[in-house]
Amino acid sequence: AQKITQTQPGMFVQEKEAVTLDCTYDTSDPSYGLFWYKQPSSGEMIFLIYQGSYDQQNATEGRYSLNFQKARKSANLVISASQLGDSAMYFCAMRAPNFGNEKLTFGTGTRLTIIP
Amino acid sequence: KAGVTQTPRYLIKTRGQQVTLSCSPISGHRSVSWYQQTPGQGLQFLFEYFSETQRNKGNFPGRFSGRQFSNSRSEMNVSTLELGDSALYLCASSLGDGQGKTEAFFGQGTRLTVV
Image (cartoon, rainbow over all chains, first blue to last red; front, top):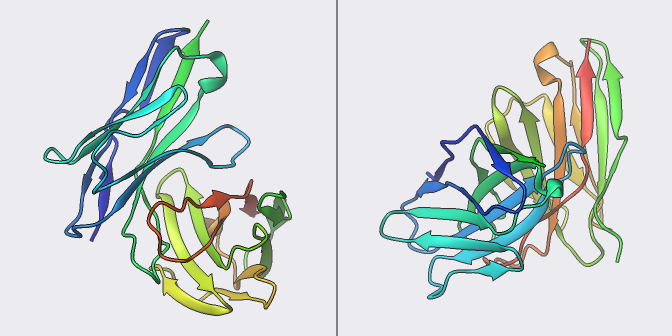
C-alpha cells in the first residue's frame, strides 16, 4: 500500500520569500511517480511538478522545484520567490506507474498563505 | 485545447435521493478517475474507467457507481444519498497509457450538498 504524509497543516510565508512544503512517502513499489498539485479556493487541482523514482536529477518547473531524497523517502516542494497567487492548498501525491493503474494517493495537504 | 469539464458545479440534494455527476475528459484521454474530497477524509479515490471499463475501484459502498461512454465521457452516480456524501467530487483525465510521468488533469469539481 502507498502512503503520503504531509505534516504541515498550514504555513504563513512573507511574499517574495522561498517556501518548502514537506512530503514523505511510503511504498513497496520499486517504481513510482510523485506529483505535487495546487488547489486554489475554486477547487480545481492544478498540476505543478512530477518526479519519477528513477530520475537522477531533481525536477524543476519554473519557480517550482522538487527536493527528492529517495533514501529518506521525501519529496519536498520548493517554491522560490513566493507570490500572493501562491496562496492555496498544496497536495503531494503518488502513483505506481503500472499500466492499468491511474490511481493517485494523496496526502492531507498543506494550506499555504502568502502575506503581503 | 479544452480542459476537463465537470457538470454541474453545484448540487443540493435531499437524503435518500440519487444524483448523477458528469465529466468530459480532455480530447484523446481515455482514462477518467473520480475522487471524493471531504474535510475529514481528504482526497479519496472512488474508481477509474478506461475504454468504457472500470479498471480500478476504491473502498466505497455499492451506492457509488460509474460508467464511461465510447467518447470517454464519464458519469458517476450516487444512490440513496446520505449526509456524509456531502463533498467535492473531482474528476481526473489522463491518457491511461501506464506511463508514470503522465499527469492527471482535474476538473473544477462538483460540490454536492446533501440536506
